Amino acid sequence: MNLKRKSMTQQEYRKTKKGFLVKLYDNMSQRVKGNQPLKSHLYKDKSILSKEDFYSWANSFEFNELFSKWEESNYDRKLTPTVDRIDSSYGYVIGNIQWLTHSENSRRSSEYRRDILLNTYTGVFYDGFEEAGRSVGSNRSQFRQWFIGSNRSKKQVSERFVKV
Image (cartoon, rainbow, N blue to C red; front, side):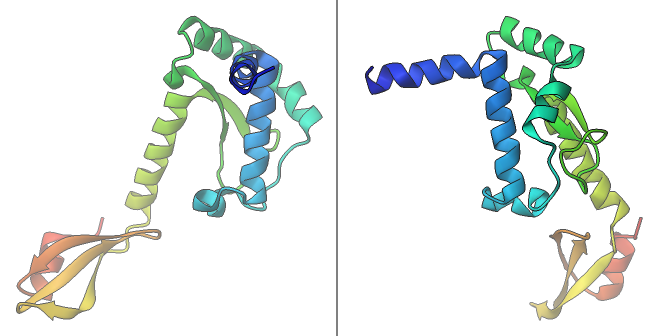
């Protein structure tokens, strides 16, 4: 069997329910082991259910319905079934996982990041240097810091960006 044919066979296998679930579990396992460095802080050392428990859990009405819709869409990425961790501080365990489409999961992730920003906003802080006679202020949340512009004074920054 030549390499191109083998590759096509793997792609076809991943579009079967069994192949899809095998690959999905492998991806989840790799995340938890920390083998995806850019996102390891989100997953590393979290719990993961056994393969057998995952396959048993996955064989559900929700998965079968999502998988059928994904097939009918000619494998539209937005409709790909994904496993969502309901509370991201916990791992892939029964009671903390649910089926969503890729699109729903992405939207949920964006809403979660927005909620964190709004709920952990700590106000304006000053970078400790002056730029052309202006105070530099930033909006800082628990995870990120955004530059919000130069202002004539710290008072002006405080008036423009009131803590929520």
